[in-house]
Length: 106
Image 1 (cartoon, rainbow, N blue to C red):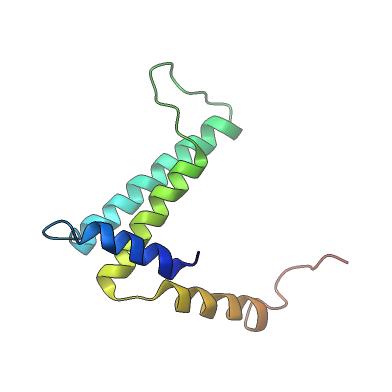
Image 2: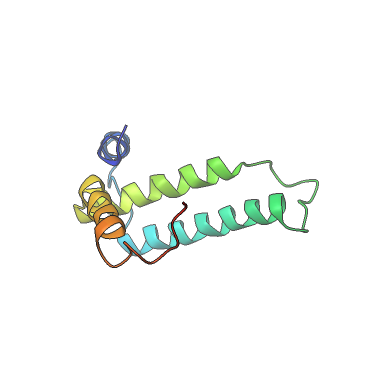
């Protein structure tokens, strides 16, 4: 499954509602909120701060999925093809400015 599949799945779900998507700035605020929740989960798992007993038990994977959903909403609203953009990004990593940026394994 690629990003295009995720974008279609999100769009199919969103099209049941009127309007299908929130305004773009509200989507950005939602993405920021989801990033905070991801940060909290990572801190609880790998840091010294533990969850309060009454806090719900989310996983890092759930929070990443929440972010992916919101990213798909933003892309769909802006008419952005994430498959194309991701492939362009990976070409840049492989052949562009990042090609020799990091030390490779032997």
